[in-house]
Length: 312
Ligand code: ASP
Image (cartoon, rainbow, N blue to C red; front, side, top):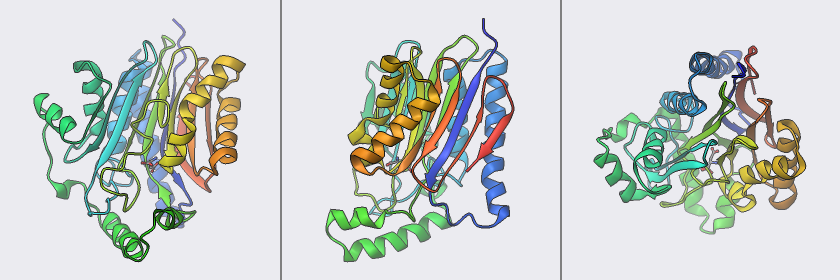
C-alpha cells in the first residue's frame, strides 16, 4: 500500500471576467477548497478514487456557482438538459448520461448506469426511465434555476434570435464565455484512478445537443495504466480532438508525466481546432496538472497527500 493519494477538481474555464471582486473570487475558491477537503477525508481513510470523484462531483453539482446540477445553464428553450459521466481506471468501466433533466445529481445517475445497467451510456427519456427504475427522485425545474442563469440565457437568446446560422452562434461563445462544467479526478492509496465530469452544457445550446462531458475519451477518461482526466470548455472542440484519450495516449506511448501530457493535449487542442477550455490530469504516480487556453480555469488539487491548493 502506497499511502499517497491525489485529488483534483475543476469548476470550469473561461474569461471569468465576472469574478472581479476579491469577495467573488474567495467564494469560488473557498467552495473548491471545502470540496477538496471532503475528498481528502475519503482518500486519507483509504476510500476509493471512484468514491472520492463521485462525492466531489456531486458536491460541485449541488453548488449553484457551477454549471452542473443546480445552477446549470439553460438551452434554447430555457430548459436545463444535463450530461455527466464517471469512469473507473481499474477496469475501464464507465457510466454516462446525456440530456437528462430534473435529476439533482446526474453524476449519481451515471454511476448507476455503470453499476446497475449493462450499458455505458443512456440518453434523454431512456436515461430518465432508468433513473425512475433505480428509485432516483425527480426534483422540480425551479431547483436548477438561478438568477444568473436566467439573465445569461436571456442575453444569449436575444442574440441567438438574430443569428440563425450555427457559425454565428459559435462566434457568440468566444472569449467572454464562461464554461462552468465541473470535474473531479483522483488517485487512491491503492494506485487506482477515477474521473468524473458533469455539466449543464453551454448557454442557449440546441435542444438535444450533447457536449464532450459525457463522452468517454473526450471530456472524461481514467485508466490506471496512464491517467485520469476531466475537461471543460467548448465541448465540440474536445469531441473532435478526443482530448482526454489523447492525453492518456501520450502517457502510454511516450511515457509523459501529467504535466507534459496536459501541455501536449492543450497544444494539440489549439493547433488542430483552436480549441477553448482546459483539462485537469493526474497520472499513475499521483502527479497533478492543470492546463487551459482560456484566461482562467477554476481548479484545485491535493498532490500526493500534500497541501490543498486552489487557483484560477
Ligand atoms: N464542456 C461543456 C460542454 O460543452 C461545457 C463546459 O465545460 O462548461 O457541454
